Structure formats: structure tokens, C-alpha cells
Amino acid sequence: MWSSKSLGSSFQHAFFRWLVRLRLIPAARLLLYPVSFYYALRPDVRKRYRPYLRHRFGTASPARELRRTAVAYKHFADVLLDRMIVGCGGSVTVRQNEHTLSALRAALSEGHGCLLVSAHFGSWQLGLLGLETLGRPMALLQFVDKEDVDKHYFQVDGQRHDVRVINSRDGMAAVIAVCDTLRNNGIVCMMGDRMTPQDKEYVTVEFLGDAVRLPAAPYILASLTGAPIVHTFSVRENGAILGLPGTLTKVPNDVRRDRDALCALAQDFMAQVERLTEQYPFHFFNFYDMWEHDDGQD
Image (tube, rainbow, N blue to C red; front, side, top):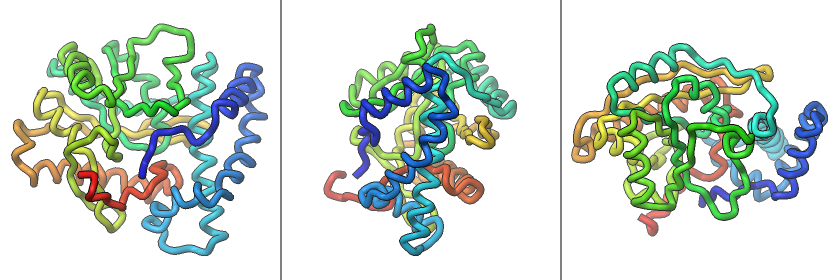
């Protein structure tokens, strides 16, 4: 069962934040290697990532699984450290993709706002960097667990940002906040690759040869509000964050009644994620069994 509870403790986050504030970033990077290996050694941690690895690579020996888990957690740790560096007033190299920016400008030109739908892939933690130059209000719709100690860069860097977090736990209040942002021709960012406890409607699509359930909310919201969807991703490569080409998607009116169209939209999104896992296999960070379906919950 997925939870947004942070894997690391508050002390661990504070320790790395202390290193960053002292500008001991190279030391922090080096420490990520033993920390990642330590987590990979834990059976409960390997269990979280095993379903993805087996769907992506097939069954492997314990040693190879351990190595792959450690590599993935090192990439994940780098993403978290990048976010911490920016939050502490530092900087990381970010190269936004011009194709993606053009797609966002085209979507906003229609005046209905835009839904930016991404996945837990690559450097999504800093995906908003560079988008603030568009000059539009932004909101991040996410499920925030009470035990989640992670903070976004715009929540801790002491600067003013026209970005806010909308907690999906707030139910109807969250829906109203999303609609307000879109009515102001703003950008609402959300994840399309993970069901949360608040998601009541889902679609079933294929991912890495098996069925997974994705939230239907992005496509239903787009259909109800007229906001186009832009699917965009970024990846951390050679110490820099690189934006990948985004795609603009128009959602038909009343798509909720057309199950085939709804599934086709979600399948196209997940096909993009699958192509990315072929190129960057250790940059997909859904650390739970997304192929396991608990029918008793639905």
C-alpha cells in the first residue's frame, strides 16, 4: 500500500540541510552513496522497489536486485538533495525544454488555465523551476501525509513565489481551489501515475506488460473546466536537470461518459512514462507495488 510518509527521518533531513547551508555540498553528495546503499540493504526498502524492477527487467539474482535498488535510491537521493540546495538559497543547473514552454504558452493562450500532469520520474521535485517565468499563478495538487517531512523549495527558501500547495485530503475545498486557479488562467500541477486515498475514480491501463490503475481526476478536471493538459517530464543527467519535450493534450467535453476515450488518454500518458523507463530505467520512483489492486477499497 502506498503512503506519502517520508522514508528519511526529520533528523536525517536536518543533517543534510545543515551540510548544504555550510556549503559542504560535495560532502553531502558523497554521503548519499552509503546512505543509499544502507536503505537498499533493508528488506522492507527492497520490497518497495522490487515490483517495478521485476516488471522492467524480469527476475534477477539478489545481488543484482540489491545493486539496482541502490542505484535507483541514489538517483532519488540526488533529486531530494537538489531540492534542498535550492530551498537553502543555492542553485542547480536547470535547462527547461523550449518545446514544453511553447506547449504551456499555447495552452494558457486559450484562457482556461492549464493542467500540468507529470509522473514520479526524474527530477519532478524541481519541475516548477523555470515555469515561474511564465508569470502565471501556480498550484501543486498533492496528497500530503501528516508524517511527510519533505518540503518543496518554494516553501523554505524565504522568497516570494506565486505557488501554493493544495492538499487533496481537503476534498471539495481542494477541488474549489483547483478551479479557482484555472479560472485565473493559472497552472495546476499534479501527478498522473499514482492513486491516492482521495481518488474515487480510476482507469485501468497497461504499463510494462501488466495492468495498473491510474487516477481519472486529471482528465475529468480538464473535461469539466476546458483546461488543456500538458504532459511534461524532466531528468537529472550529468549534474543538471533537463526538461524533456512536453505534449499538449485536449480532452473532449464530458469525457466521463466516454470510458474508451478516458482510458485512451490515460494509456497515452502511461505509454510516455514507459518509453522514459526504457531510456532511464532507474529514474522512475514509484516505490510501491502499483500492479497490486486492493478491490476491497474501491
